[in-house]
Each structure stands twice: as structure tokens, then as C-alpha cells.
Image (cartoon, rainbow, N blue to C red; front, side, top):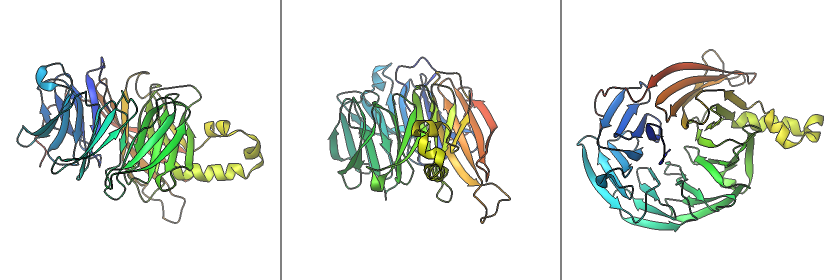
Length: 369
């Protein structure tokens, strides 16, 4: 998540594809942390960076400078090796690079009106997508090679999404998700779902990619507009999919997809479900779990669900009770991690596990190649 014109010390923050590491860009350089331990594993103080993206747990970083010095132009993408401390390759563009996504086969570079698809190994260009003006560099990418999709805004006036198959190099579909322009989009790690939020920020919608024109879930984040800063799915395949969102309200919202579907089915078959509007039903949706006032309102934040597992002591035959590990980075410089526990009755609790300052962390050792 980049923040190109921020007054905050952190200009961008991103987790790698399996959330085992995360990286931040500051006005002084960039840092890479181990997500499990919070250890600072690598840092480089050579100027400001607005994009720092890592390839899984490798030594490869894709970085873009903030333009505060000529050698760190925002129009230059550098593939950087943390083991050698040297640039492997540079790509220069006519306009600023707004976002980068990558997996083991593809490199995606998002500009304001064009998106380039490269073969990561040869860096040969495979395709160029002409897009609507996308000044925020809004995009989503599923790193799975089996369901490797890229999502980009398809309209500047509505919340339409272009879904593109990055491995087969063709458009997959277009989803008309919201009436207002998009503010956030994300794929589940396996490429099965796509979640979207508009600039209104009140409704979050989820579509199943295999039936992309059909809406699978709709969650109401709140009754009042709010800027959605991030959306992220959990990695679980054994439990109900969990989606987490951060916004300018300063709260973190978690949504359980499986529980949401079951609840809507029960409501629609009940007397009250038939007379209460969906917008009101969504407010009462028990699949929605909120952690209030995590950060001061308005401070940019980025949250991911690193792990989802079963709560010890619950049997497989019982209604699933599970816990999710939610990590939060704020652009003011803090890292926070919570455990969200959801019991068999769909009651939830949040527990703070750790918190530390990203800007004062001292480097331990370089990550492995």
C-alpha cells in the first residue's frame, strides 16, 4: 500500500505473498521484517521509497524511489538483491510507477493509464493493458499460478473491475461491483474470491471468480462513509474464509464469509428477514467483527490475516471455532498484532499480542536468498 504524498514517516507498506515477511518504505530508505518474530532482517538507508515489494521469502525486492533525489526517480523500477546489496535490473518508464505486483512467473507494473505484464525471469514484456486513468495505482493480484488474476479499475465513475488472467494473457471478465468508483480491491490468495470497496466505504462486496458476475457476499462496514485503506483475505482453506478491512475510522473490521452466507439464508427464510431491507440486515450481520479505535482516525493503516487455525480443545464434529492472527501496520510507524477468536456461537473477542515501533527497530541479519 503506497502513500505517495504522505506527511507520515512510512510511505508504503506491503507483506510478501505468504505474509512471512513485510517491508516498509520511508523517507530514508526501506526495511524488511520477519512477520513471525518482528525482527528487522534487512535495511537500506539510501533515500525515500514509495514502493517496496518482496518475492516470497527470496532476496529479490522490486523497489521504486520517491523522487526526492535524481537516482531514485518514481519512473524507475529497480529489481534489488538484498544478499549482494546490488541492483539486478532496472526498468524505466515515461510516467511514474504507481504499483508493482509479482509472483514466481510474472511481474506487473501499473502506471496511470497503462499496465505492463512481464515475464519475471527474462523481463520480456508479454502484454500491455490500456486502462482508465488510475492515479492511485489501484490493483489487486493473486500470486497463485493456478488462479493468477490481476484486477484493475474499469471505470472512473462506477465501481467496475476488469479481471485479467495474467498467465494466459487475456481478459477474464468485468464486474460491476459498486455505483461509486473503487477505493480497494483484493483477491483471496488462491484467486477464488475478489473483494471490493467503493469510495463510499460503507459496503464491501465479494464475488466468486468462477461466477464473477454473480455477487456471493455483501457486508456493511458501517452506516457512514469512510475511506477504505486496505482489504485482505486470510490464508485458510480449512475454515470459513475471513476478510479484514481497515479504514479512516481507525477501526479494523473482520468478516466471516461462510457465516455470512448461512446467516443471510436464515434471515431470508424468516418473517423478519422478508420485511427488513438488506441494508439494515447487513448492519446486524453477526459475521461482522469490529476492533474499534486501533489507530487514530484518519491515519493510514494496512492489515493482513497471517494465520487461521482451530481453537485448541474444539472437536472437528462441533461447529468450527477458530482464531485468526491479524497484523496491522500504520503509516505513523507502529506494528500491532491481534488474535481474533470466534467461538461456536459466533461470538468474537480480540486480544493484543504485541506492538512495536517500526522506525526504531535495529537490524538483525540479512534475509536468505
